[in-house]
Image 1 (tube, rainbow, N blue to C red):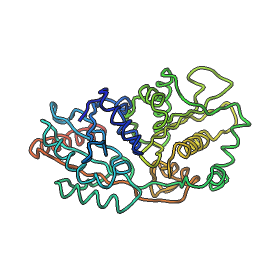
Image 2: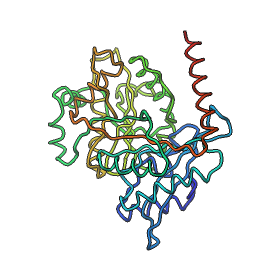
Image 3: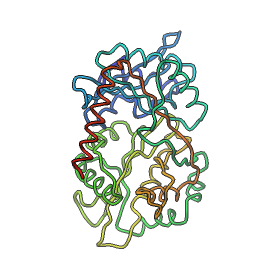
Image 4: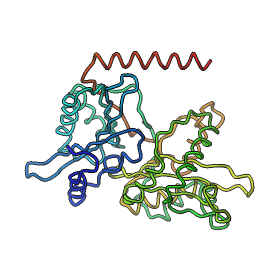
Length: 355
């Protein structure tokens, strides 16, 4: 097990890459830079010949309900773990949670479009004392886009609306380009707040955007952050919207994005060309499919506050699939139960105070 910043972590990453295993962004040494208030460790497994065969990042955050205790989390677990290492990987995770003091619970977030993979890993997790969570932290169902056809064929599969919006970029004073300036982090935060406000959602500042900018610059094979910029303006306000894509092991996911609605120029489809940029990058970087970032069953006018976002994603694909399942292990049930009670009480007080 290696800490973030350890040369052994990066050495293990390189060895696995040379063996044809490209770790998901969530298991790379720099991932903690994108998260707020977490520390990270890498759990690495060797085969009988002494070579590295699998590795995955475990992230720790302080418990707000029970100070002094920690919560462990493993994200995007599945695509880059060879089947032969599944049993050993699960056993290593459970052993880690048992061994480290003051761990309230360990959350393992399975991610794979293959139903058999999720089911088999789920059986292994259950056999080692873990329980299936009632809900997933990220998205359980998404839209998938096959990246095996040529880029021209992929583009032709989009809806006419998406294709028109992507082509329109060439006729407008806007440009898609990488976001590589940390000074744009506050603008990205403002765009995120604006986007959530439009849908009535409760914005949670999950990402350290300055860290994401740095991460994307240092790991261009695993993270891509692009923005649509006005070419007739300068400064942060020139950024109209952004989109972030992350490597999962065999696929790329749209992780986050936001946009504004400019009123001083003709209507421009801000997110369409950003999606197309990420899709092209996903194909060029070796992805077999693109995950459009989760959908709901709703649509515009259905009462679903994010139904319009799901409708937008359907402009790029209609292939809805299940991809995730979360599992939880509680090595110390008494403090975990106390923390759950305190969290429930805090949530109730918050609802009462908000009335």
